[in-house]
Amino acid sequence: MIALNEWKTQVENKMEEFMERLDAPDRLRDSMRYSLDAGGKRIRPALIYAVLDAFSIDRSKGDATAAALEMIHTYSLIHDDLPAMDDDDLRRGRPTNHIAFDEATAILAGDALLTNAFSCLLEAPASPEVKLALVERLATAAGATGMVGGQLDDMLGERGGINDVAELESIHRRKTGALLVFAVEAGGLLASVSSTDLDHLKQYGRHLGIAFQIQDDILDVTGDAEKIGKPVGSDEGNEKATYPKLLGLEGAKRALTAQVEAAEQAIDALSVEATTLKELLDFVVKRDH
Amino acid sequence: MIALNEWKTQVENKMEEFMERLDAPDRLRDSMRYSLDAGGKRIRPALIYAVLDAFSIDRSKGDATAAALEMIHTYSLIHDDLPAMDDDDLRRGRPTNHIAFDEATAILAGDALLTNAFSCLLEAPASPEVKLALVERLATAAGATGMVGGQLDDMLGERGGINDVAELESIHRRKTGALLVFAVEAGGLLASVSSTDLDHLKQYGRHLGIAFQIQDDILDVTGDAEKIGKPVGSDEGNEKATYPKLLGLEGAKRALTAQVEAAEQAIDALSVEATTLKELLDFVVKRDH
Image 1 (cartoon, each protein chain N blue to C red):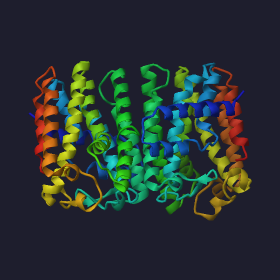
Image 2 (cartoon, rainbow over the protein chains, first blue to last red):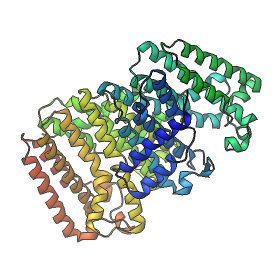
Image 3 (cartoon, each protein chain N blue to C red):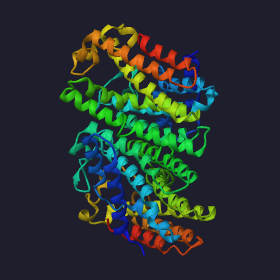
Image 4 (tube, each protein chain N blue to C red):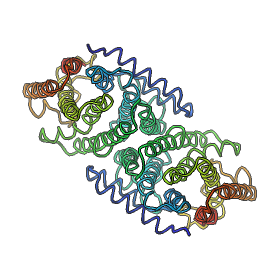
């Protein structure tokens, strides 16, 4: 059974404990904590815990990696919200970091979260080889090849226009998908799964990532503004490419189904039952915010 | 003998080779390279190579670490120059990254350099244990406890005023000193020196770091504008605390001598001759820019 709330508490406790120990100027720590505490679904940590559960590994083994991953995700939100980027004043109903503090502090809080995520990652209870693999995978997923590269292309796309699904998918695969794949891969590395299982897990992560994005785009068209925390149709007003825009709403729903089926196939190919991974997939697709 | 120009070429070749292999969007890669190529003294890489030379280790062993460190240093310059931070249009006579590209690209180029510095660091030819120690030390030196924390306090100090040398030193120790200490420590780790030698190296790095900063401040008062690349006395006009301001020019010179002597003592305590470290110290203190 997936235990989203328990997992959420678990990673939040680990982040809090890490931040308490971190020797940092008060204002910097306050700013880092402000955004770490902002909540959210903690879907990336959930993926790590779900993989550990599926392979019957004590979930606490994932704490440091889950916290590190959430620190990276949080830094990316702080920098994305900056005036020079998306220029957002609100996130999840609260002032964004640069509004609550100031722009310079927000830039530095993001930089510190990114840097110290690697310190946190090294606390994973694993062999030196596994720790090195985690560092290598995280840097690749979060860096120029992954998240940051996807973010830059997304920005250029918003200026210049994205016209086909392959291009849209390439951006999402890097901007949000890379960290989701890292989550399941990290779970697999921590659980010492076989290389075959690791491949299936990554396959699952890739399809879940695209499904996640399609569902986001669909919710922007059909969702409840209060639940999703932004005006419905807010993608419509700007030039942003979305699945419904490129494929129509029904086309987007069909694409979602195809991704879910592919993710399910990857789960079925695993050497274990992995009910938690199925339930997590369900949660991602059926969520209303 | 220190071979500053050879070392400079060596780290620049490694960075270039790493960047060529990096799978990144063109604009992001261009922006990262623009700042990596901006030159400078490459003093941090030089410290790594000087330690390896002192312990008779092939200097190529330091390439990956030197490149990673210079990537971190470069990202910090890009972010420091941003409008929300120091708002500088020029660095070393060239437009800063956000002027040459744009602010969003500069933020992302900095983020990518920081993240992928860890990928580069993992290419160090060393045991898993040494690699993990390098990752841990670099994250601590560059993060909230080190460089980013020092940068934030420096910013707050410029707003609120710094009134004593201890406070000024605490900021420099973190803002610039932490990466210099990392450089000598990394050299020591790569050379597998004894823990006693490692302590002496770190001591050397700490004193050299403060000496470096005092000399910077002195040059701002006495230097040649063309050589130092900014107007002489530019610290005078703003509220920035400097050693000459707090101690007077003669007091600052005496403080510099004291730091140099302490650094020399640390070198003398090493189990090897370490002529290169003495020469590097000399270079830092006697430079005119």
